[in-house]
Image 1 (cartoon, helix red, strand yellow):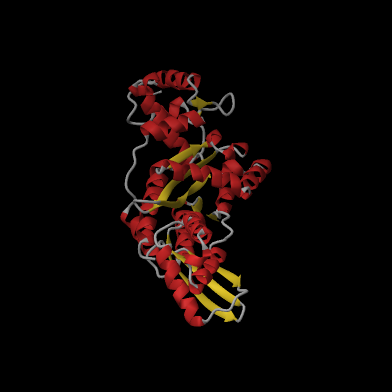
Image 2 (cartoon, one colour):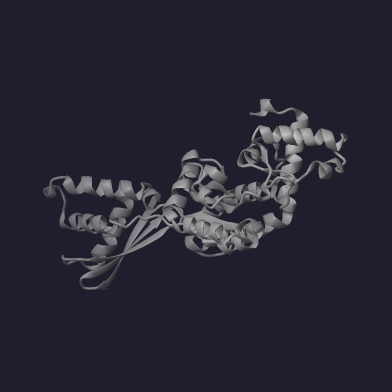
Length: 343
């Protein structure tokens, strides 16, 4: 696409996008001509704007107005023209401070979404690690009553899953401890899904090969790892859309909140980020938010070098400050990945 535009066209498109992001108003040739970087006449700039409109990078919101970027214009700007800078010292300090407080995984992920909302003034979004993808660390059993046991499954990145088990066979507290040690060793460093498969394979072996304790431990393990694994998504700051003039229209706002409420669509979009294992930017009609119009999703995966655990990002209007938001999302994903090592 870059071959379609000469250097002057690129600079004009950059100026229009940045001016529109800043002011929210259509940008005309007379305004551009007053900028020191353009040492040409207003008529020349008017012709460039017309060419950019014909190519689909700009459009006129109404007949007598200047131009505004289209989704294609934003895409070209993000892919080719935007000049990114690392977050400033204050932003980096706030992110590191927010993601180094003591607390569990849920608190950490919630803080990540709150930080992105506070720093971007758009909606912060985090997809927690899927239970099935969590790498198993250990399992503990706590007796509650004679026939009730609480199973506590702990993942390597800090995920904790609890499940109340009904036990229809006698088992002592000492046997529960031994079952915990046996299963923790058997299932160490496998995912929850792999743990279930490993337990099934062990149970399928000839029962005579097992002593009574091993049989009890495998039954407890099978019940403990049979978890509901529905995915969640944390969103902080959806009310920020109300502050944007693009969403003053009630029907558009209703469509946006309806889409935000359909978590499966959002999860499907963010799952593409995890599969790509790198930052993804979905502008306007490139995502399922197109029914609401003028919405961009910027998201990046987080996790360890070996495993992607989830996604963190921002949802906002297409008229967002990409130069600032893209580095913020990237830095937050990196900081969150580092923080998870210490959970």
